[in-house]
Length: 293
Image (cartoon, rainbow, N blue to C red):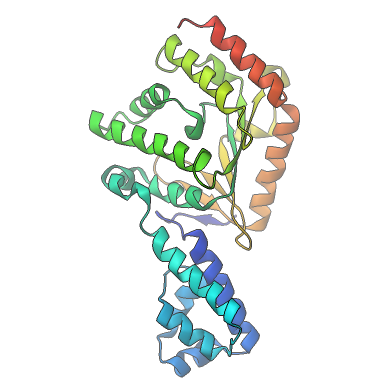
């Protein structure tokens, strides 16, 4: 199992850049040692660029492309665009919340989510963050993180709301497929009024063309999702998808093809066993109506 415990994973663009540069070097027949000698750059630095562990500059990339005899103007421009895009992704909108995000190891996930084109989220315990109302989010964060002060909780709630705007309603909204366990409907977070608003929110967002919500009924009994929640993130080609597993102290992401495929198969099974999106919305509306305003 490929476990990565980096606080801030490589940006989507850096991962693409690393793969392209490695492919071009291998196609040229040159070793890292030979490239290092030709352009007079430390071999260790070149290796970290090819693994995505560090970024680079347009000047160095041009030197590498010259070394690899890459003359195609369009290809050179595409690769240089990846360098610039990686630089821009190092200045994310959530940086202003860094004092509260870094200790919670939350910014690592945000870096991944920001570059994803599709998200498959299984959640057996809570409404996923991208679908939470402000009041529900505040109640969840305050109870799960009693070590945080009120100001820190408020900051994390603001991050959650901005995530929703950016990922579900922004210029390039992601596709979200969420499967929730029926237990989510019965666990009262905050108050019955908060839950009513939350279910109304789910019913409303579930009608967006880029959002699909399905409910996994208790009647199903045991199922493959009993191991716990997970998120599968899909990125623009050629970047491979990965799986995010959130833990209190050391959240991890899995990127081996076998791990991702196992979770993808599990998610497909859960979707097939869950109520249809239309049935789920009907259930959400009915549950909301049964709760106090």
